[in-house]
Image (tube, rainbow, N blue to C red):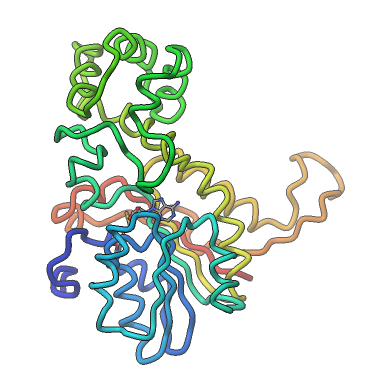
Length: 313
Ligand SMILES: C[S@@+](CC[C@H](N)C(=O)[O-])C[C@H]1O[C@@H](n2cnc3c(N)ncnc32)[C@H](O)[C@@H]1O
């Protein structure tokens, strides 16, 4: 059975769907969280597998995504709660629901296909739209704010740090020379012009768009805030599954999991442990799980997905 048989028509195909269900092992009567519910694909699978009475909390900062998830999950009435909130508020949300612990959590980071496919959200360099890139449409900073107001050196630093773009200075200079920029099309054209001649397999705008999106949504800090909350929310034996789409995010997840799976985090070479640190989790997979060729062929955006799973001790 392939995923489209399971989910029917959806604006977003859930990534590594079977791997997520296998990782969380949903069971009746248990509590689950989908921290980035999006179009509800993973949430649907968790509710389906935990029937007849497993329950799920779904979070998202995008009201359009929540509306779609609500429709998608309507067959599970009474078993799910959707909240318009950031996953950085996970523990508060659980307290409000009165859940003392959860059995499984999934977080699928990054942009959904439906967000990418709406030019007016400004995520895509393939279609022309306003320079927005906010997951949360009520957020204060847009990509236009950064592109049109940051000093050149700061813009170059941002593109270097969050885009890992080695031509960041050249790109920042070109952007500052072309201000004001209003659309994704204008920005992409300026970037392509600035890096003309460099031999790239991907669109030259890819890394700069990634950098701006990360900065607009403060994505790395959000993941850092979320991970300890998720681990503390899990019951012993519960699982957390994290899907990351770029190396900056995956590195944060990997380091956190490595650190929290060790009994001692004293500097190497120190003869006696003085940190008193105790492992709180066990890594289920040391190497990230990636999609197989069949999934990549049907859903090319899964190519960069990296799944890491832990079990709470
Ligand atoms: C890749 S999609 C998730 C797709 C989902 N797993 C599915 O199966 O349809 C990522 C979602 O995370 C949401 N998001 C981004 N930042 C968030 C945050 N801080 N808190 C909650 N959701 C967030 C986005 O709005 C987007 O809908």
